[in-house]
Length: 324
Image 1 (cartoon, rainbow, N blue to C red):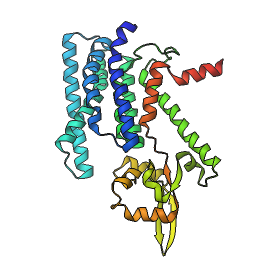
Image 2: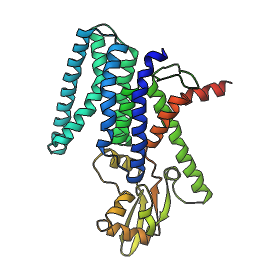
Image 3: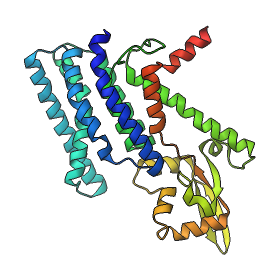
Image 4: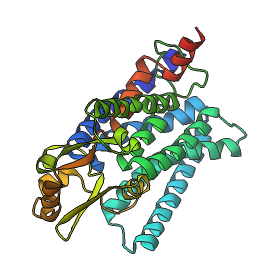
């Protein structure tokens, strides 16, 4: 079994290296350029097509050609839908570069989808293909509407590129032997550590804020906010010489992330102080400003990916520990 699955080590290494670099870029700049993912796409697209076709579905040559046709048709349909959606909702025509990048993403997405379609047509339904498709859909919802585009790409390449454990982890294989699910659950568990640490740090210093915000961020000096990392969690305004402030609601924070509304990152304050001169002056007058703790979700995704490969499913480990 290990000898057969071992080719997945190749995309696993490519994904790990890319996640390290993407995490570095996201921490420093809070943005990951799409070109960051080009090398890993070059690896996982051909490897995944061959893996799904000949290992999971065990296709012959004619069936493989049918799969390639379905992948091409599905990708073209998804790109066309993406194009129409952008034109209709944002009243703008996507550039050639945007269409190319969207085409790559939808090509990756279409691999498990096409595998499921061909499986239904040939009465050869494979659990891993269905699991990969559902994982990609979940990744889309979480990545686009809750975390960010880079997080979605990270989850997508994991979900399609490494559908099974490349080798047996220290804790053994979980009951549901679908590697991306273990990596995602590990990421969610590890992502809890940072908010808990921030909360106890805020409580230790007796910082005053609504309870939920004490898990999400901390105050910094208004005159030094440009040197911090994160985004501003408060709306600060001045009226009649009096400073008025309130926290962004969770809904407002999520909306600013999932739509094209702009949230103020400390990086923007560093790079464009002239543009944000009014805000910087208000922050100085306010004395302190609450900002997010500045750790993007791609960091726990990276940690979850590596821990799942070498250690295994943390949920399974915890359950075994509780059960004794």
